Length: 299
Length: 311
Image (cartoon, rainbow over the protein chains, first blue to last red):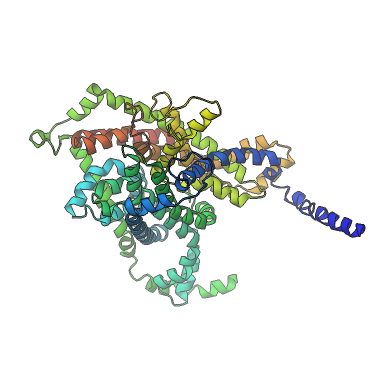
């Protein structure tokens, strides 16, 4: 009996050192040699800074109004109900989804076409066009509100989600196009040429050969466009006046700028605003690093 | 393989010509949508801002509209103390934010680039505020800084500070309070970009350095940092421009207050055009902001010798 137990007790202990032999093999990466506490201690401290604000908003959203408890118990979903129906976050949510998805689709398609041209062709105005893309990075949308407002008024798009979608797409385009053209440059041209030899036309060759290889890049660019337009506030604030057309960030701002802020409603609204973005983020997190390192700005 | 490719090549040229039947027009067609959108919604508005900057233009006072020459600019530089205040605050805001974000972002990237148990989860959690919007960041920190039920109350319970402090409405604490809120969201941006760039450092270099007996600090100084240089220059520049231009956070967190204490130049411009309807003056201020951005960016890229070593 006792021997059996001893064996059982020894087994996990014996298993534990098993990863050890791997370490010398990896020894080449000197950074791996950092003592564990030098990783966990600063990481832990930083995680506290990151997570306490998240916990705080959860706390306010889930505990009853007026409670000062530091744990969300008893738990209530009253704030969510109130915000979703009374404060029209249901409508805002729909509008934001519409804006986000439309911006994502338009940005990705237009940037894909332009990025392909930049990656694969030499044409006369290419340099000028590239320069325009780079310069546009310095143009703040916030400073163009007035002329943009006048343009959209001319186009009868004030109070229509179309204005916000257009504006978000336009300001998302330059960086997306540069990134996508770098991704395309990383796909060897000879692959496409081989497909042409096999009888594909340019479009089919692109679809069969290049597009699948662009997946991480497109996911990074597309999710960028979605998250940005989901989060962006000023265009919606300026171009949409009717309450039933507004987006989530505008709704949050309205809650915040009220004379007496309903903290529970604000917290619940904030969580509604955060959920889609966090879902997208969790999904793309892995692609983000590879997408960035592949399309690194220096290309 | 090489032979096969060589054999296969000769028939390729005529096919290639057919495959790209419209080689002249195709690239123009492909960039047309992007070019048109950007001409219409970026280039044209920029030009109209330049135009308005020389005009008196206020829809609520149409009788005064008309050509103003450089009056708007003269007014900004000589008669408007608010302009100078906001300019100084913008500089403070950008320098402190970008500096601290880079510092923490770099440290964070180096940490999560190590191999350790729980790395995936650690990365995801640490990066998560990146996706949070300016308005939501404001909402979260309004809850945290709230004088009745915010973090100060619980700190006061523990004997730190006093009850009823509101960091956002006290001129002496509003700057650090806003800085911390924006750091919370801004650090992950640098961490993600730097981590991405760290993936491409050749491991051979570290091996060689280790053989030569270089300490980890020396390896960082002589291998990692030079490798990251261009990425750091570019990301700090982009971030500085972004921090300068972005008004979401300050607009919703402090509204530029208390007493205009946290008004950046773009926030001032937004107020001038949106609230005061003084489009002409706002356009002149916008032009000044453009020129400052362009000048600072050029100087920065020159001084930092961006990309210089490759050439």
